[in-house]
Amino acid sequence: MVQSICDHLGLDASLPAPLRGLDILDVGCGGGILAESLAKRGAAVLGIDVNEEGLAAARAHAQADPRLASLCSYRATTLEDLAAAGNKFDVVIASEVIEHVRSLPTFVSSLAECARLQAPVLVTTLNRTPASYMAAIVGAEYVLRWVPKGTHHWSKFLTPTELTQLFRAHTPFHLWQLAGMEFNPVTGTWSLGTNTSINYAACFTRAAANAPLAEEPAEYPPPEQ
Image (cartoon, rainbow, N blue to C red; front, side, top):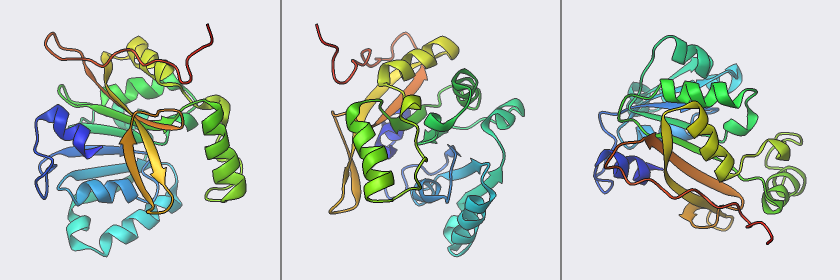
């Protein structure tokens, strides 16, 4: 995610704080894990969520580190209200939240409204495939019990094509980068790759005449001929 931001904005991802000076919006921030990760790389991050319990935990954790306390702020509000108030950011991120929203057109429109002219919008989510059903619902909810049962609704997962078409229909944004996200249970780390069958990350940007855009994503697996 940091690499995509740097690639789009022309920043050096190898620097200790490559995101210094950027205002980033973390939509559906939960306990602040992503917000803190971005703040450690220099960004000023606003995390928003409607879950007060999660926000309280995020604030408490950030306050324990003066560096994070000065860069992380949290607010109990909706994305739609934030957009309606005219708030703008250098980067807008919706990580593992779009599969839970009620109105997809309103949500993606609000993401776009919160983005400044050159700002990328990054979305991470789950693909709607048999593999994601086994991993996110059977595995995560019933076998490993990482999240409560009923957290995910497989029918609400979006394929990369559906997400791309959603942005195209309701925003001035087009797909710029697409990558699969793979979790290593041994090391507890994530990495980017080409397999989008379970988790994937998509970066959207306003189309420009000289901006190379990603190809329309193919469904995974491809439909039978």
